[in-house]
Length: 130
Image (tube, rainbow, N blue to C red; front, side, top):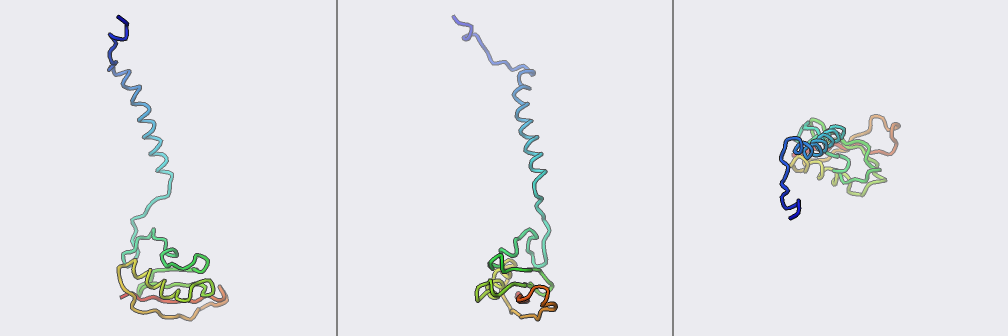
């Protein structure tokens, strides 16, 4: 008979603690890593749009064309470069932004730029969702 046939599992607290230490270390490391990452926000913009929404991406306009996308009391204001955007950029942006609020597009108004010298060639539109 060999000694291994009489062996039994060591369930003593000292031995069990050795198995728990790596688990505790892994849990502490994961907790520390998640604490260092970017924070999610529960903040909601007017219209029920989560603040973490990537609004320039949601407009479906090319990144280089979009200058500003902002939520206003009436709807959305978008400033973009029409030269870098598709021909139907106004409609694409309006559809995408109103869809974020589960609403339809009511109208799009072209707004004269108050300071055209700040970013020459841009177009400003107001989007009203119904």
